Amino acid sequence: MKAVRADAGVLNHWSVTCQTGFVRAADAALSSAAAVALVVMVATATAEDGSVLAKDPADIGAKDGGGAADPARVAPRSEWMVAAYGGSPYTYPSDVKFTKPDGNFTVKDVQWEGRPFINPIYYGVRVLRWFGDGRMGSMLDFTHSKAMSNREQQAAFEGTINGQPAPETALIGEVFRKLEASHGHNMLTLNGLLRLPSFTVRLSPYVGLGAGVSLPHSEVHVANDPSRTYEYQMAGPVGQAIIGLEFRLPRMSYFLEYKFTLADYRMPLTGRDGDILFTDVWRQLSEWWNGIEPRDGWAETRFTSHEIIGGLGVRLPVGP
Picture 1 (cartoon, rainbow, N blue to C red):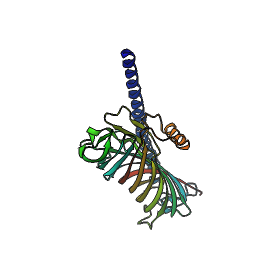
Picture 2 (picture 1 turned 30 degrees about the vertical axis):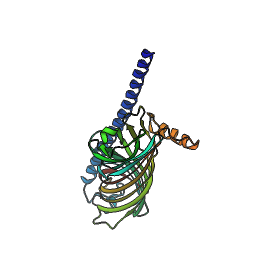
Picture 3 (picture 1 turned 180 degrees about the horizontal axis):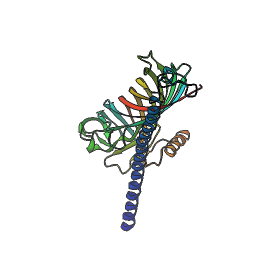
Picture 4 (picture 1 turned 135 degrees about the horizontal axis):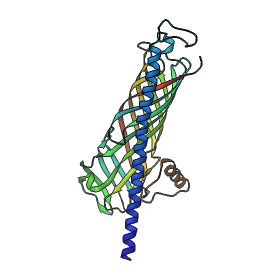
């Protein structure tokens, strides 16, 4: 029997290690793909815009629709734009409330770290559509951020943990093996955009407001608990506000942007390791539809973040 249990433990450890490695590898691949896509977009669009700018400014023929000196080449208009970006977030400390079968407890003012330049990196992709004269538009925006608890933080606790009174204070790392969304404090939002009066034909400020859903990779593991939650989830609504400045070249745009995001999280503690985003979320929705409660309860918090981003977009004009 001991041999069987030992073998089962080894297999379980091997399975968890493989799943963890798979998620890390997938996230690293996505981060790398985003970086490569951004580099390719920069190189291609810069080369194309360089060739346009190298033309004689007086060469404003019908074939090219105007030379590089023609304001119509860079002025806002009806168009699509595909863009990628990087950046850095700051997330305010927040309480994390746990509702579990063996007792409820709250961790007060957990400090969150973004670590945007450590793999998996902070990145985002978006698709924009400007209408009419380019004054109003819409945008589908996906942001891959992170929110990782500071394991060295001395935090205050209230309630009951594993059936025992929670300590008044303790290190986060002593109570949790994992408390983070490090493979994605992911946010998918649909936004409305309004272009403000331009400073010049090339510099175009804009503002935006949007809402959507958080799709984090929830990683929650209480110490001395044999199970953990390690999967993608649909955790709640997201809202964001945007203030940006676009620098327009003939075929591409650079942009610098401030984003304020607010995400309410309610994470089901399923006690399992997941697979990929689509299968994990489908399983979660199926359990919700059938009224199945998560085995280990719920974890709730709110991520309130300031984010500074910079990126590049390639524009596709609509019409002549």
